Length: 299
Image (cartoon, rainbow, N blue to C red):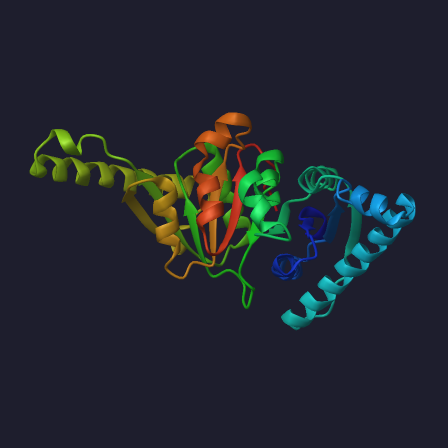
């Protein structure tokens, strides 16, 4: 089992990343997964320090890398203390470059089955404009990305999964079953109506009920195709409205984790139109697991 589920933590050594380190440590301990913690130092800001203080660039890089490794080890040790478990023997890595790109490359090279990151780090205001490291990793890589926001006091017990019947939502449900097999699931499918303004209220209500009954049957069939067992039936929700908003509203009811698929859209279309996954990532108050169709989700 240990060889099958490597976990990568992308930590910026902030308070937000401590939550991610703790959650990743908890998941790794439960599944006996090898754990790697990574911190990436962006070189661009270093040159201002070098120029203003007449420092040697190589010495500065070496010192920052040493400090990063020490910081990662401290975070891992503190995570074990919080969870009241023995500290795990984990790999720690410090690199130079762009955080999302370096983390995605490392996740691919180590065949990670999960990447865990904090919601916001040192640059929350800047991230609002250019996208968080977490969002960039969701778009860039094929590995499921868990964005941890809430201090883990227990394992995930209530999980909400967004389902639109696509291959990405199929992969998302499969990953949720792999990582949280004992949790109570809520499967949410949202649909938007277009005919409400054109027909009388009675006809609209009849059509709505028929549509929701058909969607309920389809959602249940979809769930069992993916791997839901008959003795572990989830709560099925069919909701009229915007998918992102519907999932967020459903997840407010004491959900520990929200899971959604993503197509990994990039470029101008993504920036202008956004996506359901991006909406969930930005608006959710809890942890979010995003999974791309075609990615490596097997645990």
